[in-house]
Image (cartoon, rainbow, N blue to C red; front, side, top):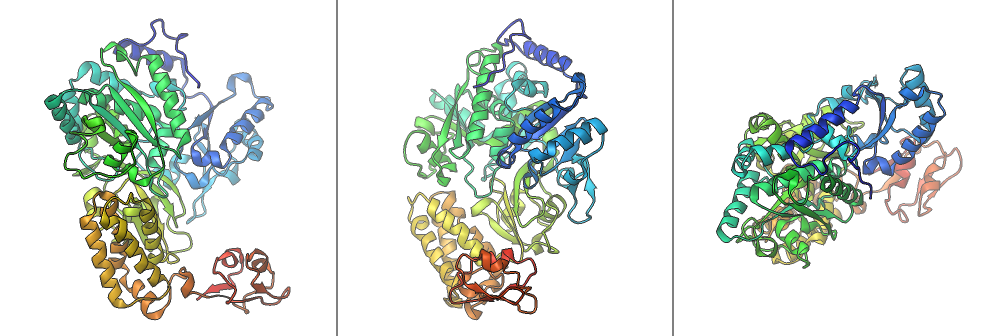
Length: 633
């Protein structure tokens, strides 16, 4: 595992005071020219999957044979996820800020020649606005970035997450030093309270109040106190916490150390889901480097405060994102929820007071300490202060990770940042809050994205998943998808969740086949409300949300399935038929070649025909037709 030794820079090692940390940062800044040329290559999970590591190697090779003067050869800097995931791999030429998308190794020689030698952008790699067709050279001018407010993610895309020197040069651990030497735990907790910071994991509980509960429990019973960073993040399509852990691991760590100082904890745990190997790797490197510099472990910065962290690998159970199930998992038991007669802040891990904070929540803590609670409270709206990171996915032009101030209307997020829906005037619905969230229709596009407004509209903030749907998405099918996921992920401990979700799914399965009666809709609604009110934990309590909100806003679509036996979106396989319009078909045969059933026949340059009895409604013919000849009824 890579370490970054500072022995060459510091005479005294590890760092033993706030002044030593500041001196270390000053020396780093003196050595670094902010205007020096460098090439940033996104190394987030999404870009890695699309070949960004190979792009970085190809850039190094292109630079080595370019003939550039050695003094101006730029550094290749790998960073965390830039957020614009649908456009990766991403490359930014600094200090000019030229933004390239969909970069391949084959493009690297042209990038070096055009951008670095001739001083011209590579036109075909620039972002093209889907509405105006305009090509945009600089990332800060692209609407996706321009309309965000990056607070928690301010370092990501600028620092190398595996080099602690980048973090310290950017101001990392200054808030920790401030807390340890200039603030009492009481003053630090009061600052968090005054900021209005609420948990970003879903429940939105005030962070300062949670910390005070643990402090009171420690004072009452004594003994060890624990702090846990919840990086389980099991929502389909959500990758907010993963990006923070991968792209700025020291921000998570610093927030955790500050929280530990406030509540009097000497031991912490980072609970990271098994499917996040890169996040665990970067966190491990960050912890090792922090220990080397005296920022983690025994006698942190010479303050006398001891604190260390251990990474716990989650086993992949969605329910372990819930506090009591997570505690069971860390203790080595099955991840099942427990009744919260006593909250974890009073009696958690091994019976001791335990604070569990979401990763994004902890990343906010150093910023509040650095800039003050008034600054933080000035962002967003009353009772929902600060910013929120969302994974914006689905039927939207600009798919990726976005950070917005609380209170931005849903419509602005989808249209201004997301670039709208491809090939449509507007979206059909947006589901917020992950699989347990609600589906809000276009008519509610002015709904502010904050805790209270989303709850009032029947949805929830959740951890930050946001899925955009268009007219080709069926609300019955969407509800089935999320309900099936939640039914499979339920721990099964309580009756309402164990049997109730299964019964709800049976209703939806019948509706998707055109079966059932109108009265069944009311029965489904009644069952959903009973499960919401009677479940043991938040998984069951919020699981009916997709059904309840689609029934509220799209009830007619349910009725069409049952009464007319049709799926208006053309999704439910038992209610649709694929056919080829003979007036449009050119006889190219592409649909027949892609059909897995071999049920499409015809002659070249003559209309083809689909055998409906053999068709499995997979949609391959629809996707492969370039002329719009394949239709769905």
